[in-house]
Image (cartoon, rainbow, N blue to C red):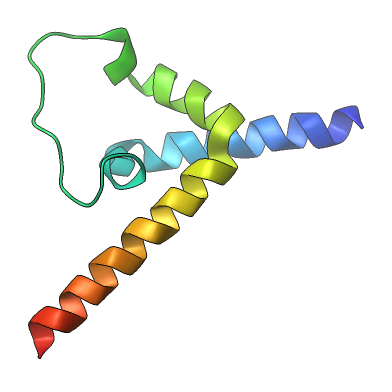
Amino acid sequence: MNAYIVAFLIFGACFGFFTFSRRHLFSEGPTQSLPTHEPNLFDGRSFWVLLCSFLWPIMLLTGVNTAWVLFKRQARQAR
């Protein structure tokens, strides 16, 4: 049982580490937010990795949804 929990958290941390540069696709939709000038705890890589460690299944679903929205948008523009 503990091995499953540890694997879940490690996979989530890896997911967060590799998706940090594209985190706008997992929360607010396909548009990037404006960068802030003030460093904030909630803007850092460590917070993103920690968040994804526990919530990576939800983040994965929101990423799939955003990818679907972007795909439909590109298909509409190609017509």
